[in-house]
Length: 547
Image (cartoon, rainbow, N blue to C red):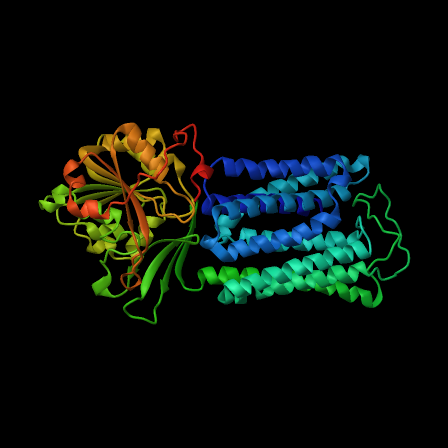
């Protein structure tokens, strides 16, 4: 138990921190807070047993588990603030429960060396499992699923050994009834707002009901008689007993089937979530930067059938399966979008001259549809798994008329190492998911971008994001470097596979700015405030630009 509890706390810390880094943002702030909460749980639990009241943390444990599973099912639809709050709270609750149970299992002082050694080994094993074993064994992020089930089993076993609670009888019943009311209200809201999603949380709802019923039965305090006390100096740790009633004997033992059933239902719901992510996958590749999968969707409709590249839960581009539609400008890159405007209305393009284009972020390769004979497109891609998937499962590389070159590595660092490229258009397509690589939006990064642009070049940034408004950052940087800022928004068009998109264009090309079509598509940015501290390599604030 000492090793297992230490390992589960470590697994939950690392697995949920990884989840936040992928779906929220890869920033030190969201690495430090989970670690600080994890260490705080050590301080609280090992300073005094009063900091870990089971009657408080057991309901919080159940609620945190339900919240994490709900976020996993919601995927990209969950907001950044909601994800950060739930994941951080869950990390603290899981760490408090694991470390609180460890403290209750502490042995006599003569065995403390073995106790702390086992605790340390458990933490190290959890880190090895998440950091080394899971990436080799699992094709997707299943360590969080395993951690949830394993931690739930350990907590159940710990309570089975020691059933002391700080409250008895009616107060526990009142807590159970309050929990039942909260669950009923939440399920009613889900059913009324999103009936289709209710079927995905059926097992989770069943698990919550099982736990509520178990809590109610336990609060009845079924009489069982006295039990023996395990000595404090036992190497396995003291097994404390309650002189009140325990649900351990006779028919009352059947009540323990309820939490077991709840854990089984939890595992079923996690299996549903994992199956939902992978059921249509043609291939799944897991690497250092996350999980990539290619899936075919809408296959029942020959005209709308498409192949999509996903990074986690985020769509990173698709291609129609119909050969006549395969080179359509779709998703965030429609012809009326900001990038479509930059590539089709560039003065050199209108004169029939070739363009030299730089692209940070490959995705499925949709932007290659804009390639024309004589064009050169140099692509910077940090994930080594993306290019092989794009070439094997999509035809953009094979069918583009432009000359293409892929540079493997971080786009900004690669540009810093290269001589001036004299791009006509430099495209930053790294901001369409919820996770924002903020090092690409700093003052120092833009010095590098402008060095690689021709004097009449265009810097285009994909700002499409449901939770973050990057316009203030781009407008401020444009003003700082004395470049013109153009914001172009387009709306979705489902028959053409076009998504609503926001693009920011920075340029000094007056001929482009005077183009009547550019003026028609340009949005009003007069109301976009730049009253924020400029982002640099030493400072950035994601919360200041939340929508």
